[in-house]
Image (tube, rainbow, N blue to C red; front, side, top):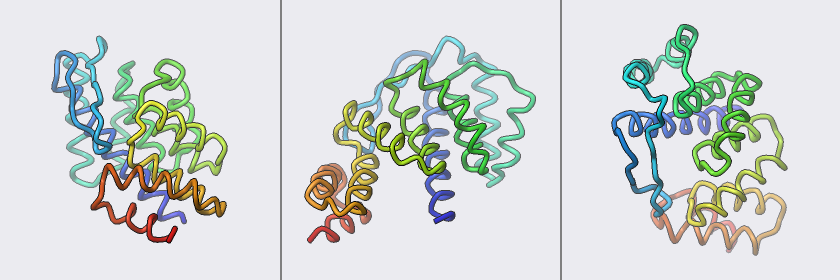
Length: 195
């Protein structure tokens, strides 16, 4: 179970880093395709200064070399208010097992960005790592309300319902995910469990 939590957090870290890098490389709003089949708007915030962009690149270098601790240590000497960088910091803390610190940042980000799917996903991962199923499911449902075809959220909710033996509801979420990513083995496995 601990390995799965670390893997999910690592996946989230990579996803958030990709969003930070995308946001940092654009000077205005831009649209990109998401794995859920929808379109997500990523906007470079006013606070994403040139130094924030350079800092994001340093973080990327450390993550590329597999040095999570060194990437996280870079935040010790860098102050930022950029939501993308703060999301990344929270995700790195979560990956390092520093759940309380990650939760503090993620919760504050959510107050200021209640409909940001990346921040909702981060808060969902924090709740999952803390073992707070109620909060995790609240975040999942909010993600799905904003992005009904979000594959990850649909699979996660399908898994949760399957564990509760609510197979009809679980299958609904797995089928939604399958419609978005028909070659996703996790989705196929989820659908297969229901038959």
